[in-house]
Image (cartoon, rainbow, N blue to C red; front, top):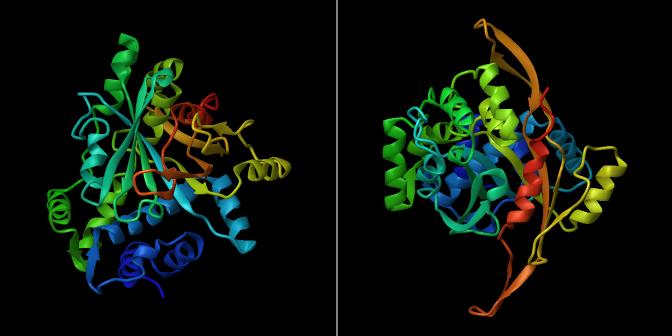
Amino acid sequence: MRNANVEHLLLKLLGPERTRSLFSTLNFPPALNVWEDGIVSRAELAQAMNMALFEGLLERSANGRTYTTETIAAGGGVHFDHGALRTVRWEQNGALPPGEAAFARILVPLGFELKGRYPLDKLGMTGRAYVHQDAPEDISQFFVSELHPERFSPEFQNAVTNVVSSSKDPLTPLAVSRLWELERDGTLPIEDAQGLLPVIVGAFARQHDVPNEADYDVLLKESAEMAWIATEGNAFNHATDRVQNVFELSDEQKEKGRPMKPEVERSRSGRVFQTAYRADVVARELRGKDGGIVTRNVPGSFYEFITRKRDFDKQTRQWKLDLRFDTGNAQGIFKMTASQAT
């Protein structure tokens, strides 16, 4: 039996066909098999948001759609492990709070807590992992990265300002109020949750105006990641399927001719293994020197795969899934959006 609250949230947002598809595709947390009709818990709203964001990723990634379709046709499913997004920690960020703060104000009321900080120094970034407190192994995590423009050249910093200073804040005053109530009480009436869901889903998008081509080229020279943000904003950079054996999956996908990462990334702990498709190439509009619109082929979002092993927790004396990330793995995965802009 489907959780009625999550189903009603998605029906309102996406309609019956897309809701049915998501329920038949994604894992569903066992903790949500009990619910109170009409009173939406933070975990239920978090799950509904994650399901909607996963669908949005598939809309932007043809390779991800193909993989998911084949997996479902073969009788399998997707265990949504985590979604990743990129932000910019910069004061000249328009009306949008800089960096991670723009999303912590959404994730924390939904029940996520900060569980790890990962320096991505080779990329001039910092990554942070948010894990859900109520169902950490079953509700998809968030890997939120911040780019630090001050680590780059003055020309680069000026281009960042030109791109992001027009950013709008997607959260309305009413949405902010409802997030505060959710953080206080842990629940919302379903009508309030239905009104909040499209606003928070809409936050995972580009909030700034069409960037200038000249600024894009400046950014691309120093940071493929910032160039990606210029065209894609805060959309999901990638979504990840948790699989039993990422090595076997990688070989299978390569045999099918899919654009896989050459090597599987291995964490220093020896318990987390990741690989991915290369980012799908998408056409994006930029503003040319004459003020007109030009179209460029640039890297979009992509689909990732992860295998996590269990670790023995000495305090609880239980085996727990290793939900951590790895700096080396993350920097390797981030390269999936590099060297594809034309």
